[in-house]
Image 1 (cartoon, helix red, strand yellow):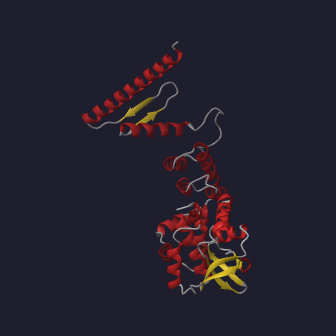
Image 2 (image 1 turned 60 degrees about the vertical axis):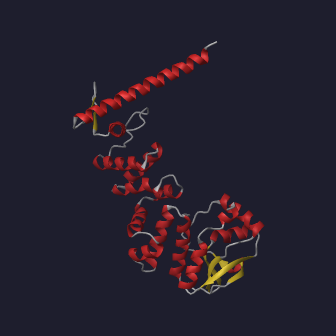
Length: 311
């Protein structure tokens, strides 16, 4: 499939056929003047990649709009239901008309179809998706369970996205621009103070923590909200407690058993648990293999250095 056809949206054909039957669409493709069509103010997607839009516009200029947009009749002209990228690209390409299917939808159905179209293409960021769910629930009397059935998502999926709207606006913006991922932001909801959520979000971004590390960070912040206080020297990259926790996790993964590090002022110790003689043999073997690997790496480095400076 070439880039142009990919940009025109996959999966819409099935959506149009389904809605034409179930929603009693007029079903006829018409060439409508762009000036007669207005954008849907409740379009879930609010961010459009300008470069991708220009590429689609170039394709439209060369091949035309191959997939009709969906519209509904309103008091003055038509309102766009699905296909805003094609609508915008057609305008950029200088087209005066665009192929469209006129559907007999009410306001709630318009929002549902626009949401479903974007979900099928995975075009929405987490906050756009959450706001679309909130709009359908608040303005059209939907229930979470009913909405889940309509958009093909689980009720828990919808509930989790809605909870993101309780995060501070700055963190929501991190999700919108991709600085934070859903798996990194969701655990922050367990923190009760917005200031603490913000401090944790900035720390997560700064240190590029995985979702698993974020969960661990949140648990520690629940026990000690002052953990991320900036009362540390400039040379410190992270709180010592977190450094120790990460080291423990790495050793647990290595040995496959519980490992505890006890830091001290003058000396510290590492405690590795084992439960059977076989466990002990396995731990010793792991240490031996790792030591052999390190020795081999050192020899290889020395050999490369020696070859480099050999005349």
